[in-house]
Length: 66
Image (tube, rainbow, N blue to C red; front, side, top):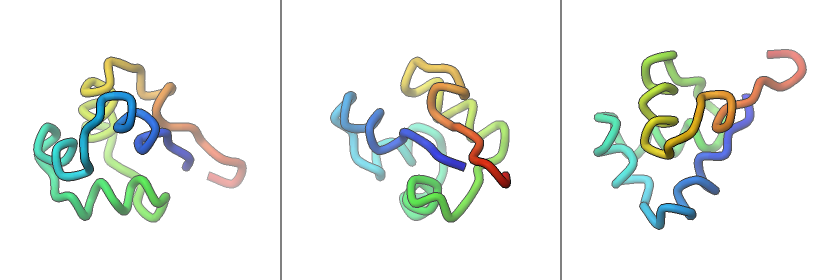
């Protein structure tokens, strides 16, 4: 699953730690999601998208084979 978290964070000028705090997870969780190593739960994906004022589909995109 692809995501645009890093780009969206840059737009808001927030760190992984700041995003993590806003969605109540660890910075490491945000790091692994950004790196594509972990697929977030639906609830977490919704929380992340809400921080960016975007839809889940704007932040996360299925890749072929997902």
